[in-house]
Length: 283
Ligand SMILES: Nc1ncnc2c1ncn2[C@@H]1O[C@H](COP(=O)(O)OP(=O)(O)OP(=O)(O)O)[C@@H](O)[C@H]1O
Ligand SMILES: [Mg+2]
Image (tube, rainbow, N blue to C red; front, side, top):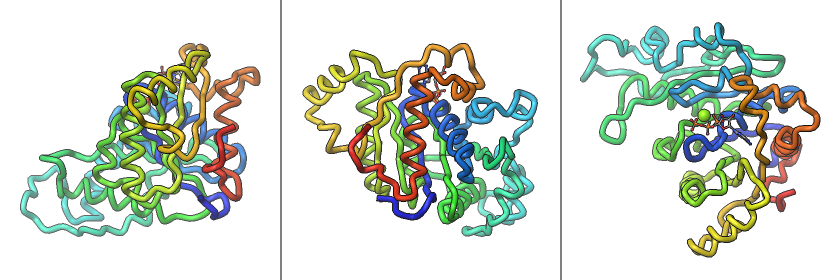
């Protein structure tokens, strides 16, 4: 259980297209409005989060993700990735204390965004200057206090292989009620536990009347008891208006009648509670 006051680091993960970025952007917006200092981090090379947060097409399109910022990488590691530097020596633990101040974009009061870009893969792991810088950045963010960090990840489980979210307090695993998405969610839960994340929650998105039955069927077919694999189960209803609002999906929070907005607000309240009760039974 997370006991430090309003300080939490959340990784949002799950299969492709299940609603990770929509949830991240809405949670970030609600928490920031509640007075929590929020840093939203986009680790997905598709860079959808700035648009979802309503940054506007012009500002969002101008963003250079950190992994493509060769000047900063050179300043911090001693290697410019644009030049051919194979075999060169570089700093393995660069000091990235200034990364948020220099590259964080202010989205709204209390809400900043950092766009990482993704790590290059080379035979399952690449010890290059970009990777070292990105990993150092996440490790540094994971040490910051008195704020909420929300890390929106690329689809799938690859980021667990790099233990990017080691030291985080929560893992929100987003799924829909299909077999394949739930299967990925269970695998993700296992990986999140392996890197020591204490609160592992299942968020079933686009939930409807048939969802409880589908979850029960998944449990019977696979022998995986969801209540044992996850600390908490959250259900987020299907929200047809999100399709109209795209890409600025956080505008759904302005609709008091939206059940999706209400459910995300309740989830945010659980994360932002002084003594996090994430392991209590789902509401
Ligand atoms: N509860 C919901 N009801 C209806 N549509 C939803 C809901 N949540 C998300 N969506 C829609 O589903 C689509 C995918 O959402 P989103 O981009 O958040 O998924 P993602 O998991 O981040 O995808 P990716 O894996 O590509 O990063 C979007 O069109 C979004 O508006
Ligand atoms: Mg996404």
